[in-house]
Image (cartoon, rainbow, N blue to C red; front, side, top):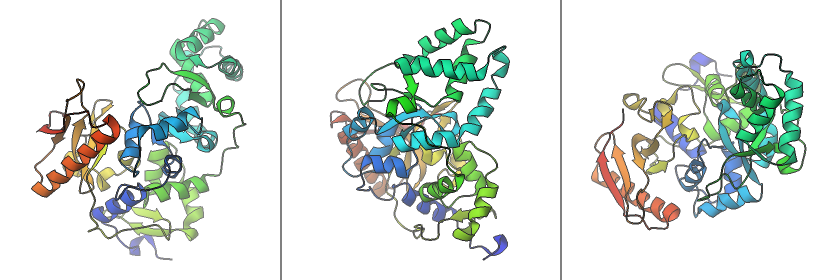
Length: 371
């Protein structure tokens, strides 16, 4: 097998096109929404609407009801998994990926341990499970109930402990399209009516990660998962994988038969929501984010809705605000050609039709006003 020093080099555009292909962003895919959620290993869902926009950018014929119906039927659900953030996962992944990342939840809990004097964590887990399985509970009710049991503890630390110790899903109607509802929690096992699976070996998840985000380094996957010490897993899988290197000499792993399109393959414009995993799942984000634009997709802890042009971050956008007739606003970081601008406008109008029923007032361009 080729050594690291002789492995083929994949340039930035080659990595860009390969990743876009795996992410269903070079062309819209015909697969059902549930299959796409599984392939992508979940949809980043810190807010309610981003998962809908993630699928709208990737799937042909997608309408918001496609995901809402999956939420309502409990085929998918929202819970904390990778990077301590909420994701929308299939039921199977809720019951398997969550145990896989338990080590990260244990580390997170350690940060709050000082706020839990005298708290028996096993008792807290058992009490919390019984409380939220009796009926789904708002976060405030869970916090107040825990505080009655442990009045000397920090209220935030108590709710963090419950979240870290148990796989708590956000129950519907929270998460449904165009439905406003508070967060209510129960356990994944209770919501889906079946026991959690044992934590899977990391090997299978590495292969799934590469299928959705590869080619990638060990550090890339650790960034995506919020885990550490995955080098041994990659080494164990090395005989089954191909190896490359990026332009900085970092070793990359990939599935042998995974698509790696020609770097010249056209990449259509795509409107992505805030917190799209495309921009969050690699230690080195230069395959999507040009160095000159590093940091422009964020302000503080808030993520912008982002626009890809020719496969790379090129601007941000704002949804229609103010009712019927309001435009979708595009803020480009730099000028683009007439043909590209026309393609951006066309894609924006498609988004308006899909997500807003065509009631908005077209696409408007403005100067970038962020950091």
